[in-house]
Length: 280
Length: 264
Image (cartoon, rainbow over all chains, first blue to last red):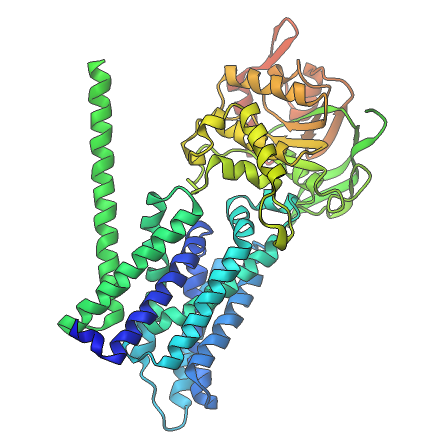
């Protein structure tokens, strides 16, 4: 328990818990609404915000925040009309944001930011201020989802029926994307923008087969995200590895084991059902 | 019951991009009617239903539900969507689905009232799905799932009920049961139904219309070979058995394929 004596480790642990809860809540809606590609687009475009911040000399966290919000609104508006080729636009946004970030960082006077910390996260450098910000963001997300829950649920399940109930699904959709944008800002800090998608989808994928309701899915995926984050943090400290990728490695391993075992179980069940049928 | 205009379309045009789907649709039905929409796949039946409900906006023309625009008439009509047999296994319980019929648009009344729960309970019992109320919707049989969707639509207490191919994925015994339910419901509400079961529905409906780019309205419920020919644009084989007319299944598929090839 000696590592808990270090403040940086306690902060990292708290940050991991907060981000896991946010990812569990929003990952559920990302998966059931098939927004994985949009979430990835927002995360990568956010790096453009880092470039802007360095070039104009303001805080990179503010930069990623502004860029995430802008790109979630923009991609939301584009995908809302379900026009064809919206996936291409997301892809362009994804790449252009990254390119802009790198070029602006090159042009920024004197200072050279650590690109790797944005790509793969920097959970060990979370400060008290960061922690307060993350707590505020997670609380806001949890509250908004609680208030909008039934509307989010009906929109995700049957958009047409939601509309004839008079629900403004376009607004609910934009609100969801905004929240995803906010959670992406936090998640970049923990696992980096390249790995954001993994933390939003892996726990949720496993949770989906365990739960029979959206609420259950949120609880299971938050719980799984906590397990992955905490165990990744501890293992990376013990073996001196980069934390973000360690968290994702554990999640991916569990994902592979889960998929493998459920496949074996499914086949075993089929074989057993067949042989009982034969006996009859 | 009669007299009030339940659903009216005047000069409605709709296209997807440059592809015209519906041309100059004019129709009107009155409260208490039971209208079946038939026609080939891709003929625009589902599109027309979505236009009725305001889910799509016509390029030209106007839709009126009980004399109001679809937006103003929200709450007076309800909808049973087409069930896809390979539907994605969404994590939602049967009772949650039925409760959706009671959901209001207000953010601050997002809790269900006692009346909402009672209505849901009543619907679950009426459609004999109370025993599976706490199961995941994906675990239900085709017939049970269809009944859950009708229960959801009726939980909203509509005056006009629209159903898009409610009998798909249900065995013939289940279909008869379904149409009996609809016939009973028709005593209290107007029904518009999209169907392929030309033969079976005749006993239950009051009027029929064919949709194939254009709208061919027929006042009564009889489906004649001439009418089918006009809509499908080629001779259709009919099996006559008493009053029961049935299109030969294989033949119909073939016809639809031919239509696709010829670009209709």
